[in-house]
Every structure is written in structure tokens, then in C-alpha cells.
Image (cartoon, rainbow, N blue to C red; front, side, top):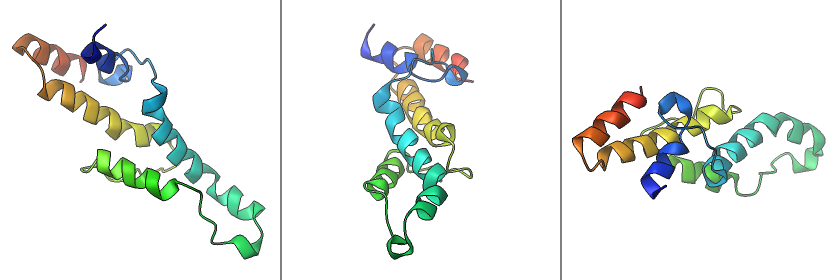
Length: 114
């Protein structure tokens, strides 16, 4: 399987992939959503003296997500991994379509991605 085929295979089924999860692709949305999902618990566990505690690397993770998805806004439900992952997957899908080498490949990618 070449790199292009692998990139498509790792997309969710709903946008034309096989749904094979790549750890390097889901780690960012998983981290961001888990921080949002546990933020209240973290604040409750920590003492009031650490109320301004920040999760290490969280700001950098959000920055990386925004760089990768410049035309997307953070999701309404920030604790949903799927909502953070969706724009990242769309970037991969759009890149595959934009770099299609034949009209048939482009048509196939457009057809399966809807």
C-alpha cells in the first residue's frame, strides 16, 4: 500500500476511509478532548492554592491544532474527541483530493468522501 492509499485508509469510514486508526493522528484530538473532559475534576482535586494550574503542553496542543486546521473553530463540545478529529481528517481528505494525479482518482475520492 503506497502512502496515498494508507492516508485514505486511515480516514474515518464516513469520509471515505477504512477507519484504521493511526496513533499519530488521533493523539492530538485525544489529548485535547481528555483535558477538556477532566478539567472540572482536575480543579476539584487540586487545592485552592493551585487553582491556576495549567495542564502541561495543553496550550501547545491547541496551537498545533489551530495551525493544522486554520479554517476551523474549536468544537462546541470540547470534550468530544471526534469533534476535534473531524477537521484534521478533512484536511487529509482535502489534500488527497487536491493532489489527485488523475481525474478518475479525484472522482473516486469525491464520491467516497460524501
